[in-house]
Length: 69
Image (cartoon, rainbow, N blue to C red; front, side, top):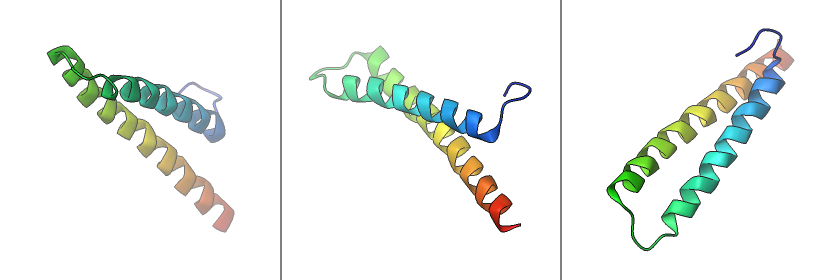
């Protein structure tokens, strides 16, 4: 997170990363055969996607709480 970034900026960035990772993951999953490196890449992609999804969910929760309070 860079200084001066809003939660909306961070959310947007995380969403963009999540979409990019999903595209790469889908590309790999369409292949009829995966190398060992590609199989490892799939595992890493899924973990990174989850990381960015967690960031997005946390920001959504924070923004909801801000509206309530």
